[in-house]
Image 1 (cartoon, one colour):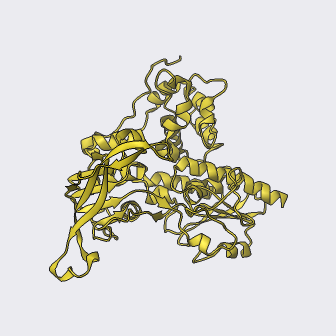
Image 2: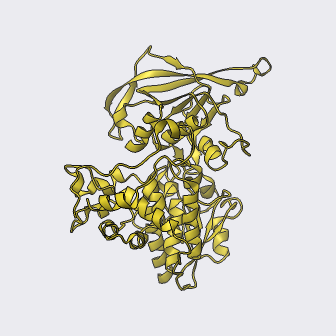
Image 3: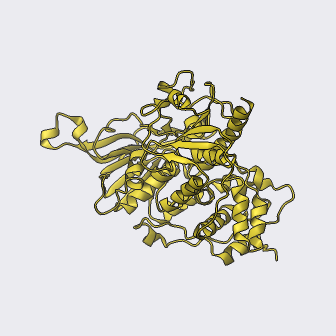
Length: 471
């Protein structure tokens, strides 16, 4: 029976006052009953515009039809034809600007909750025990993948399904890349990521951690070891700073360091192996998803007051609407149309001669107004002279973007990068300027979304297969 409700089924969630003080997942997921009801809102359009909006081309109407029929495992298998990380995508993919933005139901009402349904299906599958994985027949070819983030895992999974012997090399001690060090537990539980990695291992993918390509091994050495192609999905882990006075003070973090200490090293635990400043007043500079993650993490670490300092208005805020709403519900204070000009601090008497030994006491911001559009199409923020004010804080987190790490480029002859440090590739294939080397994800584009990185990994896997077979 079609469900013609104009609104999608709401996502059950923890109450804001409760979740703001714990690291448990904020959203609780659909029940089977809610999932079937939401699936019945899908019109199963003949031309499936939602699929066109998906970077990995999941057969969306088909998997939703399986949910309508109560065949949840069949729905999972349908998604798995296109995606290696459905439980991850169902949680962090910006469906509102991709598949759901193309949904016919969304023209006059709310679109079908495609992401919520994908999450439900993946969680149902992951709850099953002793699920068999069809291991493909080996084809005798070997491929190395650098980085175990979303692009690397997707490329590895697609190649493994074609019979390739794939080894993933990860610099950190845990596989998952940005999924484990960047996205907080309350948004993406690490057991979910581990489950996805374990599924790939069952397909035959070998994961080697604590291997820094460019230091432990070079790309040229990987070829000498017998790999016929290499995919570089090393991400964008080099943080950017603003270049304002006070950024060397104690209590100033890049968002990368702040989130890595909390997410990967579990600095939120009572006796953590890595320290983190559990500040009482925190300012997070930036307006993207990473800024929201940092602000909400600071709150959960015990901060009494957390500011988001962003130089444009709410309409220009680049973070997902859902993440912004969650942050506001939890009490994050949005200081919009403000831009930092200096981080203030004090020094202990014995440290006065060394400015790096100071401690943060506040952040000076200046009011902004929006002028004419800039190259990005957004209205350019312009300072209002004489409008400076100080926000009293003891910690500042800079979240204004990241760049690809230059290590691989500096140790790999023939691999060209652009002026931002991104590896230059053919868009249709992911092929780099070095023979046999392909790349994708943030290592190419700079910081972007998980699903776009997955799409790049998928594109490269297809091209690598064609390259090796033709070779």
